[in-house]
Image 1 (spheres, rainbow, N blue to C red):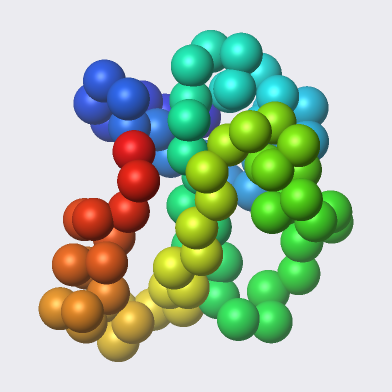
Image 2 (image 1 turned 90 degrees about the horizontal axis):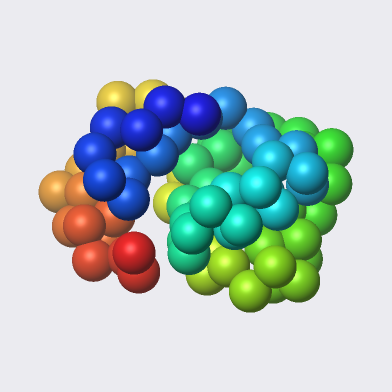
Length: 79
């Protein structure tokens, strides 16, 4: 995981154990940027719910997905 700013981290696909460590470290939200149809080894949304993490999906499969509307949605997602 890379910390870009206080409270803002990014990474590749976390494991359930990594999500738990992030929650223990104070992370409150997960934003899933996987493209539609991109596989995940576990139900990330359910795991986030079990850990009481807010969970949002904002699919990005390339630059064309970064529309003004998508960027605005990302800006207003829960922290």
